[in-house]
Picture (tube, rainbow, N blue to C red):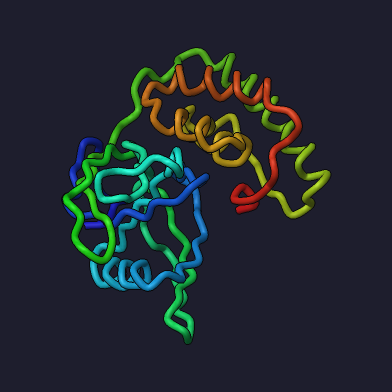
Length: 217
């Protein structure tokens, strides 16, 4: 069963974890990856042979390590599904992951060659009935996107007031919030009302416009 068919609170017992600094994967967004380390090449092969799930997990602090000397990782991440892949001649991969939802991570005891975890999908709570703040976020996001596009003409960001509130906030966070710790806080916030308020607050005080790195997708 693919992640797209999984309801809230579903549990996936064995999901490969791909720890990375600065990367937070939001529901409904695409994340391109270039996989070059041998252990993650094997991870990719295993995922492709199975349910195609990979969870990219933020490393909040590169200096913080667990008892095995591995980087400590966040407790919530996006559940990614490989929707496109290209295996290169040297064994490396180009991947495109679609995030199917937020998930709480319980990491398994480490077994070579890569980390794995038990993931529980997290649903949205407290969806706002009043769309006033939502319209404010959409307007501000449009202004910020225009500034980024002035520097990076290839930057693409469009959003509609007709979208569900959760999707609007997640898309704004993915494309427009630059700092990884702020992005992670938004990912971990299940309350859509609180997530909306936080995204609006972060966007209002975030100057100058962020670099367009992963938000060019």
